[in-house]
Length: 116
Image (cartoon, rainbow, N blue to C red; front, side, top):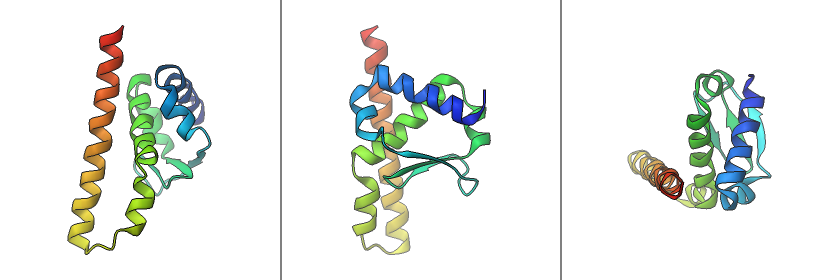
């Protein structure tokens, strides 16, 4: 399966399992980009490294997509633009945003497993 097909499959899984997040982020443009090792979002586009996407299982890719959707839903791209931070504070800020997104993904996945 190629990267775009794998992402489309992951998006369908998110739509079924996490409809709120899907509908909040359904309009993100998929952009293949080798500038990133994994995936990223600026709130308008979902950037992906095709090699990374193809290396993941279906469940892992669904989790990564949910992670990027968390950034959009929690307004991270827009908050980061507004934050005037020194380089050290920017690193701490970025790590904190990653932590929050990961925490939410773990919660969503565990909630789904508990319900089934």
